[in-house]
Length: 130
Image 1: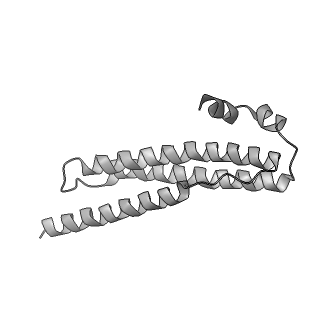
Image 2: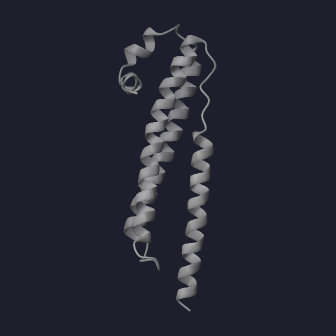
Image 3: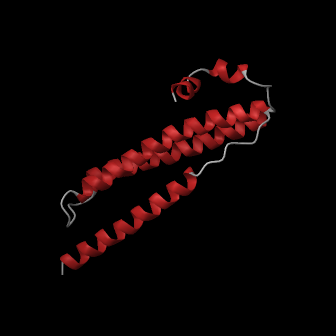
């Protein structure tokens, strides 16, 4: 694990492996990394917005739970993004098959489940106000 983390911060390590690829592949990998980073930032922003702007919800501390979940998910996405970028860059340079990842499916399920929970929270609040 520490070896993988060290690779994130050592560009010379990435260039020392394999052959220099067509730069378009490296740039495409970087664009994908930046897209994942934007997703992580959006989740962090959503967590901060939930903490600051959501009114108190019917369940005790539900607002804080939502905020913390979004913040943790955003941080996880950012860390996963840099790991996937490094592994993909290494595979490109070595002419290997690109690393497979279940993370997009897991993230989609987590966001979908969170949306369903928020629907229930909104409906519970609407029923409670009647």
